[in-house]
Length: 307
Image (tube, rainbow, N blue to C red; front, side):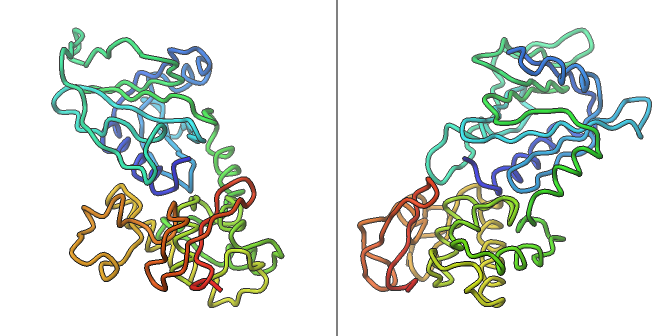
C-alpha cells in the first residue's frame, strides 16, 4: 500500500495538472458512474491529501459555493496513471503495482494525441478496469483498483477526515492527538504507528525505519514510552516522510552510513536500515536484523539497537 508521502505527491501532481480546469469525469468501468456524473463538468479547485486519503474539491462553474469532494484511497491495489500531450508533464503512475520503496517515474505519453473542435485533448481508449477518468485540456488521469472512491459533500468529507489521526506531512498538524492516543494504549507501538486513527500516512517502511532511528523496541506498549520518546517518533516521521515526498523514494539512511552514495543513488541497496534487511548485519551494531509478523504485516528491527 502506498504510504502517505505518495498521496501528497499525487495531490500536488493532480493540482498542478488540473487545478482551475473544467474536467470531464467518467467511469469507463461503470462502477463509479453515479459519482462521476456528479462531478462531471465541474472545476477542480483543490487537491490535497491527509494520510492515505486523497481529497479533490470540485466546484460548480457558475456557483463557487457549490462544492463536492471526490475522496479516494488507493488501498493495496489502487493506482493513478497519466497521459497527454507534450505540455502535460506527469509521472507515468503513482500507486500499485510498484517496487518496494515506490518511486514515480516516466513521463506523459504524447504520441498520437488528437484534439476535439474546442482544442481539448481527446483521450485514448481506457485500458483495463478504469474506475474513474479525469480529462483536462492537455491530458487525462485514470484511477484503477482503489479501495475507496466516493463523492461527498464537504461536511461528509470533513467528518471522515476527523476520524483520522494527525498527518506528519501537514505543516499545521498538532501531534497532541497522536501523543495522547499512543501514550494511553497498551498495544505495541509498532502497531500504533500503523493505526490511521492514531497517526495518518505511516506505512510499514516508515514504521520500521523511524523506530530503528529512535532506538525503540517495536513491541513496547505505547503507554510505556515517555512523552519525549513519542514526540521523537513523530518528529522522526515528519523528517523521513518529507524526504519521501521530496524525492519520491523512501530513503531513511544518513549519508554517514552510506559514504560516497548520494541520496539520488541510495535506492535500493543503501536506502534503509532494517526494512527488508532481515538476516543481514545491522549497519550500526552488526547484529542480525530480525523479522516477524505483527498484525499481519512484516516487522523489521535490530534486537540490539532497539533493545
